[in-house]
Image (tube, rainbow, N blue to C red; front, top):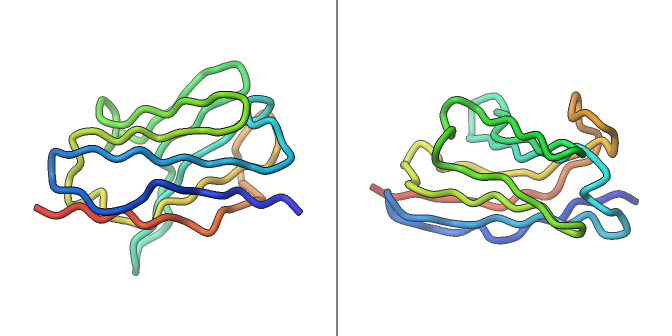
Amino acid sequence: QVQPVESGGGSAQAGGSLKLSCAVPGYTVSDYCMGWFRQTPGKEREEVALIYRYGDTHYADSVKGRFTISRDTTKIYLLMNNLKPEDTAMYYCATRLALTCDRPSFWGQGTQVTVSS
């Protein structure tokens, strides 16, 4: 069973930082495209950041310059700086264990990020 596992969510004040981590037990995450997504109640899920096998990254416009996706062989990370209240959401790690992140098949349980003003 492929099950991403996120950690690192929590609460922060606006302007603060949090770092999320995600592992996929049994898999070398650097072999695949991996992504972070987020969702708030009543809104569609939003792609936040992707990291591809060869290291290319892609960010949503709303987080460019503030969030950084990175990885080692076992985990991917999302460093979130200069947090804003609108970053409050459930954050999910996802992959389809392929070179692209289109329509991820495997999703973590999510980790809550709450930013207060």
